[in-house]
Amino acid sequence: MFVMISVLLYPVRLILRVLCSVLFPPSVIDYLTSVLISVLEANLMPDFITRMGIRLLLRERLDLHRHKSHSDQIEEKSAFVAELRSMPVAINTDEANEQHYELPTDFFKLCLGPNMKYSSCIYPKGNETLEEAERAMLTLYCERAKLGPGQRILELGCGWGSLCLFIAERYPTSRVKAVSNSRTQREHIMALAFARGIKNLQVITANMVEFDEKSTSDRYDRIVSVEMLEHMKNYDVVFRRVSRWLAPNGLFFCHVFAHKHYAYHFEDSGKPQDWMARHFFLGGTMPSADLFLHFQRDLDVVKRWWINGCHYSKTLEAWLRNQDRRKRECWPYLVDTYGDPKNPNSRASRRNIVRWWVRWRVFYIACSELFRYNKGEEWGVLFYLFRKRPGGGFSQSPGKAFR
Image (cartoon, rainbow, N blue to C red; front, side, top):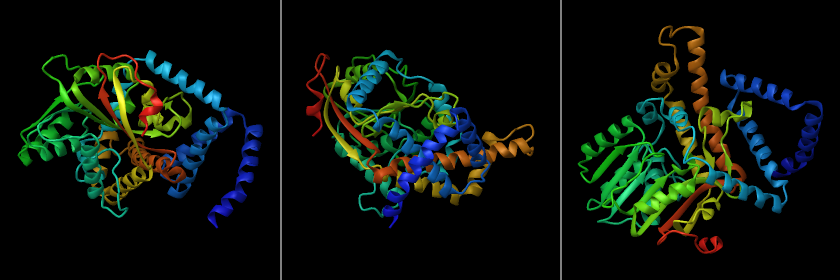
């Protein structure tokens, strides 16, 4: 019945879209969007309306690409790859780091799962708890990355340590090094390692843009990365460094979120529609499922795996439920971070606290709706396994790598 209604309403939506484009110039659409966002951030909009609006915006984004010819899409992808090659390793790194980590670790302890995994989990049976889904994904990483005892393992961008702690505990004879861009995250990880008696884990604090293992003695059997490459731009440079850090038979495993066809930047052009980039992912990249096939000068793609986006959606909904259920415990951290320290009870201070409570909720909702769109078959999670390419250079035809 729902499908029949949607089909019947589609021509109506098309007519309304045409009328809106004729009656309302872009400036008016932007103004109306800004007003709606103000209503949303004042906590006056029900979730079901927010979700409907997000799905409409997702449809608009896809329609921008789908209505182009295949030839134009190939040209667009080629231009995007060339642009990435001309860019710095990453942009807006300080702003992006502040967007996600200005709240203290204790806030995220209330929202995330017990392993503090700030990335997609996986629900093999569909009825797992968040903790079970965390561990299922961590276990899958170990299998797909071909991790094992006695290896030298490097993790790039370790967050709160869910993976590096899991690896070090699972393979006590391996030597694990993790790179964090946050002093407080490093302290959190090392405290957990000490409490668990883990002695084969080293965590260093470094900016991933500048990090470089130049010592010839530091070569790794495995390098792993989870949702770090989405913050990068020039993948030629990144993969060249990774190749240099790998031992001759080394492998690089990465987990990224991606769209099945389209790659794009997260940019803030000043328009109200750029809400996600402005508040949560400035300078980020949405890879397409084939994007890294264009960057095989120093690494060869061995295999790729696609994971349906509904797994990420379920993860985000679990985080949202945790935030809502623990609102009373979360609130003091929002007050300390977003309130006015000189006048915490002022109207402006209280409004900003509410605004950021809503923004974090909408961040989870928006990402959840993105990953569940089209039953999880538009945006999802992509695993890549690379091997070190002897001497660098260009690799074989990318099409042969997807198997």
